[in-house]
Amino acid sequence: MANRYEQIADDLRRLIAAGTWPVSERMPAEAELAARYRVSTPTLRMSLDLLQSEGLIEKRHGIGNFVRRPGQRVAYASDRRLAVSQAAPDVGADDSVSLDIAMVEADARLASLLDLRVGSPLTEYVFISHQCASPRSLTRIYVPHAVASPAVPEAHGSPWGDSVRQLLSAEGVEVVRTTERVTARFPTANEAHVLNISTRTSVLAVERTSTDASDRVVEGALLVLPGDRIEVLFTTRSAVAATEEMETAGWPRTG
Amino acid sequence: MANRYEQIADDLRRLIAAGTWPVSERMPAEAELAARYRVSTPTLRMSLDLLQSEGLIEKRHGIGNFVRRPGQRVAYASDRRLAVSQAAPDVGADDSVSLDIAMVEADARLASLLDLRVGSPLTEYVFISHQCASPRSLTRIYVPHAVASPAVPEAHGSPWGDSVRQLLSAEGVEVVRTTERVTARFPTANEAHVLNISTRTSVLAVERTSTDASDRVVEGALLVLPGDRIEVLFTTRSAVAATEEMETAGWPRTG
DNA sequence: CAGTGGTCTAGACCACGAA
DNA sequence: TCGTGGTCTAGACCACTGT
Image 1: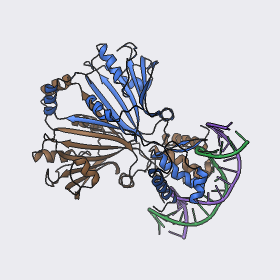
Image 2 (image 1 turned 135 degrees about the horizontal axis):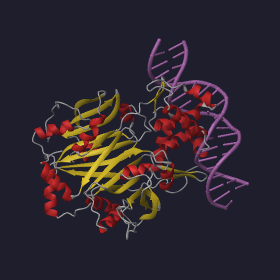
Image 3 (image 1 turned 30 degrees about the horizontal axis):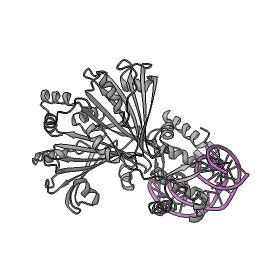
Image 4 (image 1 turned 120 degrees about the vertical axis):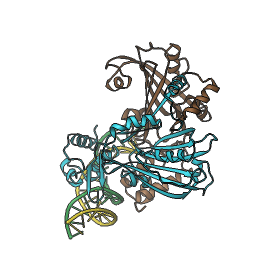
């Protein structure tokens, strides 16, 4: 820990943890902090870069640097029963989910995800969940018109697009298998803008596809989940345990 | 794209993609690149920082900057059948897995993970997988002595510690449920050192616990997976489909 | 406008690794 | 020792935001 900028970052972390600057209020200007620590501005900015990439502060050009609300961690779970039980305690009055619907054509990436031709017509559902007016997750769901005609979900309380699956179910589309592919990366410029995070914070990128009995992809989803706000949960039961559970519980057939 | 350093990063990306500098050979010195682009060294270093965080280059203090081998992406899958089928095409002669075994006592974090008291004796298995002599994944597995006495796995071809589960199985410990908790974050200094990555690249952090029929945690695992080299796969079958598959396939009982 | 953060300069000196 | 990347300076000027 010989580096000056890491020492300063440590000190700032301590001050933030101690509540020196109220959440959502301006920290001292960079020039003032630099003077206080007797370093040049580029050095101080290296420290702030560290804090920003850790999600501790939020920088607003022309306004100032702000301590970010710690924000509870929310779970995304493939297993719907888990999602409910785990997410419930975290969902408060400040949480909300917005939904936009659009008609789009499959580009190369979506065509590959959904196993369709480029240009195939799709319905796009974009869910953005918020906590305390601050964006927390981005979920984009694509349903081929060949699978189900565009429709508007009645309620959309889940940030993960459960309501779209309910739509499918209502149209008689039965999901037999769901596959999730999870990677860690940085957000694109657009994703960072929508989620109001820096392009230097890690996000979980989840590609989800749901298929029916004939292995047709009936839903593809792209989720972008800031790593410091969201975790992904998976549970695998051994064959014996799973079978017993299902038999005793009368589990619904689709996730 | 007005920023000079982003323009330069773009140009360097293009040059790297074009194979201008052979993999694992030195790029021109930063001072030379700065002169070539007619910028100061801090500006050029901002460009290199971008490439580094994208995993495109590797910086070695006192030696130089190197283009990183693109590296095939490998899948970690909770479902063992998937892990085999997906990973097989990627596993070449240059892949290897090292294993170290140690006796440790549970710290606060491990005690919480394994649902034990702090100080409980554990066996620690550390798997590091390599591709072309370059580290690719870090898996730390902890087995309480109360569950199984320390033992050395015969083979350890899997980077995810399957051999430890085989050990457990051989001792009559039956895994009934496996839970995985996935987050995106930056590696700790130690993790970055072991994996030979920068502390500014995203990694997937997986916390895995396996429990037996009495809900006792028999294995806890901490996996650190560089986001640009590894992806995590999960598949969920609907109850009906899963039951049918198991009945017809005579699936083994433990993962 | 004034004040903020964002970018950039043209150096300096230090720390590391190899010869 | 030498060449490399790592850190740091003391400014300058630009871009953004609210008044």
